[in-house]
Amino acid sequence: MRIVFAGTPEFAVPSLHALADAGHDIVGVITREDAPVGRKRVLTPSPVARAAEERGLSVLKANRLDDVATEWVRGLDAELGAIVAYGGLVREPLLSLPLHGWINLHFSELPAWRGAAPVQRALEAGEQRLGVTVFRLVEALDAGDVLTRDAKRFPEGTTAGEALSELASYGTDALVEAVAMLARDPSAGEPQRGEAGYARKLAREDGRLDLGGSTAEVLAKWAGMTPEPGAFARFEGQPLKIHEMRRSDEPAGEGSPGTATLVAGRAVLALSDGALELVRVQPAGKPAMDGAAWLRGRGGEAVLS
Image (cartoon, rainbow, N blue to C red; front, side, top):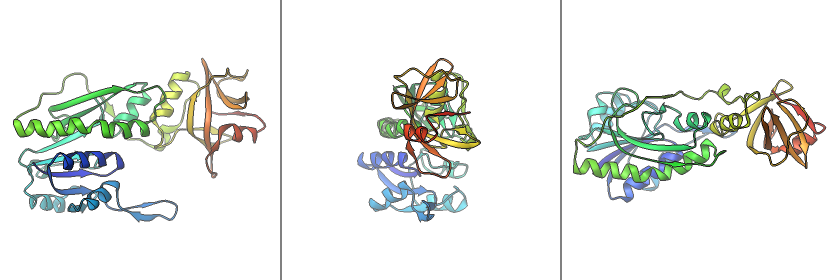
């Protein structure tokens, strides 16, 4: 099938490769424009742009699917559009340009967690069963008919970054099968069933941990917000970013919830029903470091909020 592909981040790359490796003709790739990366803010192509260029595919870099993108796609004579985390909406008349319309690989079991951050919000809510759904794009948000879906369970404490990386590869089978379904039956698809949920876009403040919660709640919040926007608590009025956290094998000290103490050489954070270990942290304005080393520098005890 002649497919135009739209995607941007690293976890969209496996889908591009899977469609090409399945023998489909990728007639064009749309991705967002080069963005500044690193401390020197060097303009860098997106992961999808790099993957497409390595395959010798035609690439359009655009931050919006506007009239220019629409005319570019019009000239491709595509039979299908496939979008995976492009970072923008597909609207008419672009939505109807490919013969079979557009499909989207979404990282949730729709209609649960429609929106921009499905994996992050699911993990934040304490869910460990995470899914993928391939559905037809319509003008309403993530509301089109479902073609294929799949799901798997993840261990407690799996971060959003780890889950997305795994789902990116796991979901390619569902995507390739959805294209095959449409080739066999262009009218394929079933309406979404169940209560819809919304995964709102992430903001920096979403990463702040509520240390008054239980160990399960704090660990779930940390997992959902790692690596982006980044989970943090506050220490002496400054953010303390927590890069790695896990359930503690050691009991907490006698401090109230939010108190971190050295226990058997580890930084153990007391919570209402147990403790978590601060494995790796990053104080404001400093590089990431071992949590126990940071706590030793504070005299072996610190009160976080």
